[in-house]
Image 1 (cartoon, rainbow, N blue to C red):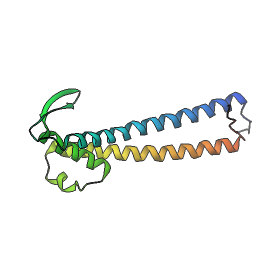
Image 2: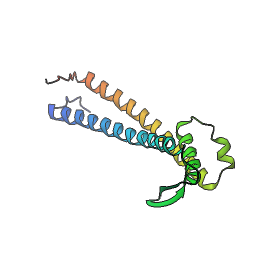
Image 3: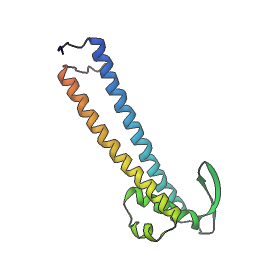
Image 4: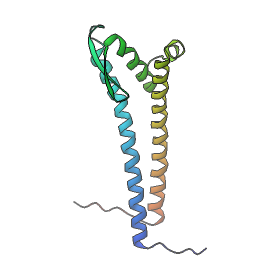
Length: 142
């Protein structure tokens, strides 16, 4: 194996690849976090409404008509599974199968977010080491 110095074009390609990967990870993290916030917003919006009021929910790509009293518990279970702000373990063991599946799904989203954050930090560290190793300095244009 020879210690061949990479060309400027190869360094530029690697630099751009790091930047694209970091941007992609950040975008996915943002999408998942916005989904969590969307749940909170809906919960805050429908909580004060009468339980018998009609509302609609997207289930598997189909818009279904429900009442607030039917939708709110599922949303709260989903949100508590994601945010950890509420004690949802009792609901998990005694809730319906649908509530359990929703809880597990959103618990998985939280785990995915954490995993993506760790991947982002690792990739960012690799990127910084790459820049240092090849003496790459970013010059901002104004």
